[in-house]
Length: 329
Image (cartoon, rainbow, N blue to C red; front, side, top):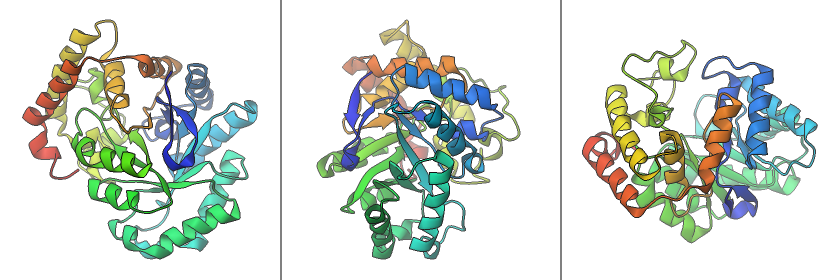
């Protein structure tokens, strides 16, 4: 497993991390024993960063990680959580008082005195121009409630505004073979500023695994059902905003490209390796529903890809996806 420094946090983390949205049961039910087994498998495979949020399962994901941390003292895992989605999305709600309440809740869930990294959870765009928000975050650092802070964003412009803030340690953004705009604009700026990049939704909500067909159905409480058209939150969070039928077709082409370069790897592993290979990416955070997925994801942290593959991915994106995706994200 390769390791990299996570931007201004100064922490060394595995290039493949673990996203834990699914452990909060927002992708269908996952029982506690299975969730803990996923955390075990990921850590055993070399993963040293877990990403969560206070709203994943209304704190269930954080609490499960907290239990795991208690059972594995000194495990050397960086936990990145998020806050801000517990209130209507207005900048006026991003206050020091609310930050203290939210971080206190997360610290209790995780069982820690100081949170390793707290990210604003896709806040309103106007927030990036408000010095008071970032002054409040600096206060939390000074008080010892958090060690560092970052942001999770939807849009490239939001990422660039965050990178310009002097104490933002990391930016989390959707980056995958179906979402290339960040490669051209965000990653170079982050590298120049020393800001870490956490790449989320690296498999386009599973599309890039190549396992889905037009007939595939998802549980009613799975966001791939209830948010397919952006009914609950930004549609870009579900299948990276790609129309499902288009995504299935493009994923089939991606799988063919992947098989040509790494015939013994799965399309999902190749998709993760592609993200990890992008200059400026600190860590990639795929989710896993079971230990086998966690181990397979982690293995992608040691793969190398030929230059021809990157050109093939770009050609596929330009032909099938760019017109619909590039102007929005």
